Length: 280
Figure 1: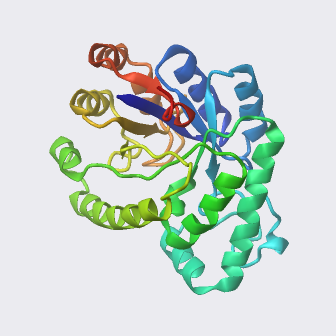
Figure 2: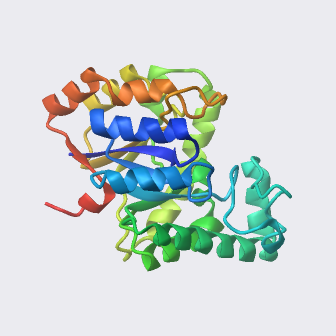
């Protein structure tokens, strides 16, 4: 069984960058997804170049973050400060209802792929900040760009509801809603990917425990893992990022945990990346 352990938000801050590199060098992290327009993106790229064993993907921002293009180029999407709104639902409606917004988003997404290409890093895989790529209109823009720019994989967040509820019943209603919505959309996207060379894992864990990928949860997940491949994604940081479900030192501690490493070794799990899913 192959297991990808990925860190989102690489490039967002210096503390996240430091956590990503430490989790890879000292822990079990195998890959990270880069926010190419974020404040610390240049530092992240420099660190990635110094750490070639770390697979790096593109964390496309289509909500809740900085854009590559200026506000005047995509006025239907951004605030005057050049930021996507944090309201994913409102943005989703806009992407579904406004052709102008969707055209602007297509241009912005291509600009983000171009900026990643300019780093010279190999493009491991793609996903979106706040899972905005699960929106059908965004997904249909993302797939051809991922293929054009040589990505090897794409995240489909197919988490498991019942094990997550047995572990933690907090926000049970939200988790049930997520399971229904993400389940329907991921089935749609799997059909869209037929014939594509983009790899997907059988499961992705992190949706139900966003911001709380504790050692106990990850150990339990790894111990019962029975699929051929899985991704577990984290939001590690060396310092709290002032977000309830955002980057946090707890996720970093889990990635550095000797017990997590022990379970991986005991079960014979192969630490993997999206490019390695088709190997062997």
